[in-house]
Image (cartoon, rainbow, N blue to C red; front, side, top):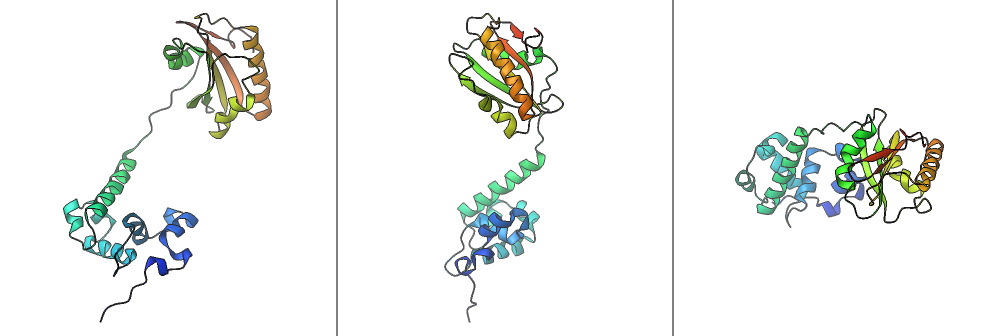
Amino acid sequence: MSEYQTMIRDLPQNQRPRERLLEFGASALSDTELLAILLRVGSARESVLRLAERLLHHFGSIKGIAQATAVDLSEVKGIGPAKSTELLAAIELGIRLSRFSEAPRPTIRSPQNVYDLFGSEMRYLSQEQFRTLSLDTKGGVIRSRTVTQGSLNASIVEAREVFREAISCNAANLIAIHNHPSGDPSPSQEDISLTKRLVEAGKVIGIGVLDHLIVGDGKFVSLKERGLM
């Protein structure tokens, strides 16, 4: 006598693995449910949850599955080449994640540190480019962003765009950088006015503008060092 099985489509929405993951997060799911999501479908006679259960039983545990080869996996009825490769790919991602460690963030201690990061690239740009460098409380670099490109003037550099990236990554401070394609990094009156406007906006937002570097051909100017901000 054949055994009746409840298929995924027959389950209430709040009991389906994918819906449960979206509502409660992956950590709330059982090993069987997580495997069922990876396997995606069962067969006309067997639900994907039942297939996941058989897979776990065959190898004893998630660890057993992780140690299996494609040939081993294909020994389980219902696990063909497509499903075995998807499982192996997911397992390999997990292994790589367990080994992953982020490289130390560059730390900004001086204007020279900023120039070392961007100078060799920005000195050769044929157009003016305005960038921001978002920093944590210890001066560690979180992220950099190009805000505008083209002819730079204070009227088109909007404070909200300058601070957008810093706000999104919870930065404590930022540094502004832009280049002078002429090769002469001497700040214009417009550069100085823009910098002062950004400093004031940063005070309102709660993000410090530590400096504004202007990059030229093999040299730079720090408005902070010049006392212009």
